[in-house]
Image: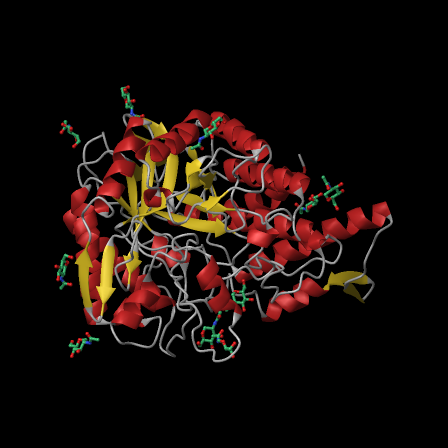
Length: 548
Ligand SMILES: *[C@@H]1O[C@H](CO)[C@@H](O)[C@H](O)[C@H]1NC(C)=O
Ligand SMILES: *[C@@H]1O[C@H](CO)[C@@H](O)[C@H](O)[C@H]1NC(C)=O
Ligand SMILES: *[C@@H]1O[C@H](CO)[C@@H](O)[C@H](O)[C@H]1NC(C)=O
Ligand SMILES: *[C@@H]1O[C@H](CO)[C@@H](O)[C@H](O)[C@H]1NC(C)=O
Ligand SMILES: *[C@@H]1O[C@H](CO)[C@@H](O)[C@H](O)[C@H]1NC(C)=O
Ligand SMILES: *[C@@H]1O[C@H](CO)[C@@H](O)[C@H](O)[C@H]1NC(C)=O
Ligand SMILES: *[C@@H]1O[C@H](CO)[C@@H](O)[C@H](O)[C@H]1NC(C)=O
Ligand SMILES: *[C@@H]1O[C@H](CO)[C@@H](O)[C@H](O)[C@H]1NC(C)=O
Ligand SMILES: *[C@@H]1O[C@H](CO)[C@@H](O)[C@H](O)[C@H]1NC(C)=O
Ligand SMILES: *[C@@H]1O[C@H](CO)[C@@H](O)[C@H](O)[C@H]1NC(C)=O
């Protein structure tokens, strides 16, 4: 029940502001297709709230039987939506394996053969046969090139680029930086503003969108995974939240002009900017929201403010401090002012609310969500890679990751409610102690914690979740997502065992006993795979059955 102790705070904030109009969500095609409104999603004649999962690697599987079996197992859990990469850009044509588009020296060529878009066709068709919808992501913020600048001793990036097969990592499918490199440009944000790149990306987008324009299995066109100003190549000094918002508006209008059947979604990690100037301001209006039920007060939701964040953090610290005091484990982190304890968080936060909320990443997810052609928003929960709040000294490292994620879920839900559109948690995960050797952050090409590369020393494995903490964390994310009213909640990432090994990204499974069947292996593991993790699969299954 402790999760719900947060709600007094939200409720008090939610009830106080003036009416906020819902922004346009373009009317979509007939009821065979997924549509979105301020009340959530509808599909196939009924409302749809879902649990889902991520598997960017699905179109790279060589065997169609494997694709079928993976989808069958997901469908058997009761999950309804999967999220995949509908892009696979290469700079030279690979000897083997799936690729969709060659981007080379300012020109592009689509591969629509059996190793190209026909693989995507298979995935979409089979998903439909299993009653699953597919979020089709169109590009990635992250595509670090292996470091080849080293002379003499190889850098860790070089080592890993040799040892990790293509398409193992989510950031090895091309993306924004690949376009920038092949169009002879230097800055990550050239992707959003350079006319030649925009034309090339729209050309790719058009071919994908028109290919599936009549497929009821497409849940949405997701413009990009985790778009930001920054990536692993530099960004120019001119990139701001408005650069990223404008790009989303341009691309959303472009897709809406091609396809009236499907929703366009943002795939941002949910970063906000409480104090940035807005291109699509959420403004009170004279035209009222639909009448509330008789006897109920009309409730509106205010956007997240800096003051709220400061208050919320201080309150959370006070509670944790009181609990620690009772348990006799108190760690002082505050100061006394006129006999009253004041947390240092309050003072820290007053000057800086952190990069997830201050716009420094160039992302204002609330402004993006309010773009008329955007049907729903997204955010992500990866507390091993992002800090959603300063650490509380009265919680251990894993509790800090989980607590800050729970607050982040509420804040993201509140921000979307203020706009009046659905929001989906499109990826959540905790890196476990068991998975640590496989963990590759989204901005890297190698396993920084593995003993072979060991560039980041693990100060203590207890900084990462053990299996019990992972189970508790996932359960609390799902519970909080459900009670905060998210329209969908997606785990990252699915894992399958027993996949035919010939697919490049599949590595022969030598870790499990008894010895696996010859020439089969596990799907890629970037630190978040739940292959062979029956407990987490069971938690997802229960959540899928409970959410409806
Ligand atoms: C790249 O394209 C330019 C023209 O756009 C051409 O002059 C140049 O030779 C090409 N480079 C390669 C390596 O193909
Ligand atoms: C658009 O894509 C097609 C198919 O890959 C390609 O032949 C054509 O050159 C592209 N056009 C532009 C302007 O990039
Ligand atoms: C849509 O509804 C029809 C009729 O009820 C059903 O047969 C079909 O499986 C449903 N499709 C999905 C994707 O749920
Ligand atoms: C690339 O590797 C070289 C040599 O190991 C190293 O000095 C350099 O900092 C690396 N660059 C990046 C961007 O990691
Ligand atoms: C709705 O779209 C589906 C898929 O394209 C199509 O099969 C169906 O005939 C359409 N129904 C109506 C009433 O237009
Ligand atoms: C983004 O990149 C710029 C320049 O490359 C750098 O100054 C800034 O600190 C980066 N911001 C974040 C949030 O990483
Ligand atoms: C923070 O996490 C701890 C342990 O998981 C929990 O007991 C506590 O209630 C959480 N605090 C808040 C404010 O949710
Ligand atoms: C990658 O991101 C992490 C934060 O998750 C940061 O600490 C690290 O410096 C970044 N590494 C590179 C190579 O950009
Ligand atoms: C996981 O870590 C917690 C907190 O340190 C500990 O209480 C628990 O016993 C551990 N569980 C396992 C299975 O190691
Ligand atoms: C599907 O689930 C079954 C039963 O748990 C398992 O034996 C099989 O390996 C799974 N297949 C895939 C492709 O994940």
